[in-house]
Image (cartoon, rainbow, N blue to C red; front, side, top):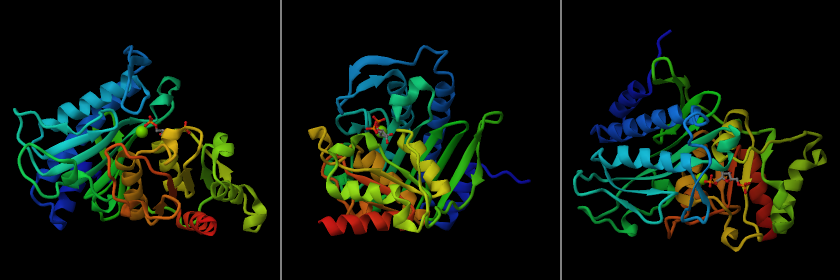
Length: 336
Ligand code: AHM
Ligand code: MG
């Protein structure tokens, strides 16, 4: 059987698109190499003394774990020297990350969550890296303003995630469908294992942290109750699955069909717009979901149509199979 590496796939795809400059391939290749480096250390984290916390608190007010910090440093180190970016935004950094004087700049902008679901690391649960790629909108040179890079998710030229699970996989889209590649550790290459992923139009799973029930508004309670009551869907029973690691919850639902919800809640004022970040979590997952035939909304609006105003802006995220997301949208509309 002919094995297709992610790089070969990229080159073929590049010929078919307008990304034929090679700069986009360079960018993807640096992300892929970073993913391999992070994967190598995630699988050995227990041995390398990189479990646990660094003792610092990040911009989100969360304790930084050593693996978060490591993954962040790997990505910044690789990408700042690639010569294709004008700036980066990371979940772990308060401000835009500029490209140091020593390296050339390009016109792509990369937003990433270096290690999502990191609260799970010490328990050996699957975690991931999420990224979204944009083109700089106006402006040249080294000094980049927020206005030049903050854009609607719909402007992403590519988005993807790497899941460090029982195997390491890269799932990505450049706006022409979604493909999944599995890392073969014996050859160190991501090989095409899941071509043209389509999310089932209707699923059998709902994923939400129901521990926050009392802090939800009525629309959210009704939406979740809908999935819990087989009488609402001719006796069809939904399974509840929640890992607490967005990449893993999203990935499972993408393959099996289902819906993931992280709604707003009134438990914590910081989370009145939900917990997940627009730029590094919601927008990339929304692009992948739509490219696979699914949907992503904040309850009312299409995620990809939202214009973020800040790097770390949060947004409610409801994403997955079309039928389930439409049902939730209908319930929210009734409560509006
Ligand atoms: P992180 O970026 O700090 O890891 O937080 C994001 C994670 C997501 O992976 C997951 O969906 C969510 O937080 C779980 O939050 P909760 O524990 O509130 O259910
Ligand atoms: Mg995250």
